[in-house]
Image (cartoon, rainbow, N blue to C red):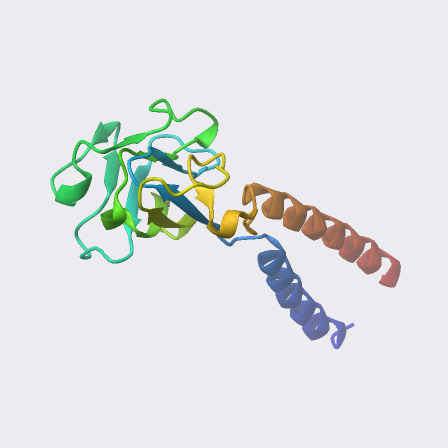
Length: 189
């Protein structure tokens, strides 16, 4: 039985790794193209969002600058990049069902870039949505997406619709593995 304990510990470490890897903890990613002058919605969903700090960044801005910062029920504009002042809003200010999507009004070529949605929970702020926006000059035609823009190349983008699908699948796999481990341990005894 003593030789079984180290193997059991290694199995639990492997099991923990599998659960983490299967959790689907990667951000929603999408590339969209919009025509200059359009209003564009950048999609982001934060499951179980309840007034934590929400921040939209563009990766090429200075560290202290941001596109939008919402903290404790208040929009903070202190370090908001000047080009976004009075040009951004949340799609749903009540953030029902975790909808923390950003609307960017009257886009121009200066809005080209990669945008990240972050929700600060328990000291972590990994991006939960990463969207690369390309703005075409006026008069450029193409199919439009649900994000208010057009997919790059006029095609459907890859990317998951919602990170919670991976989490549900990963946790389901973990539950099945846990039950199998308990049954295996009981049979072994």
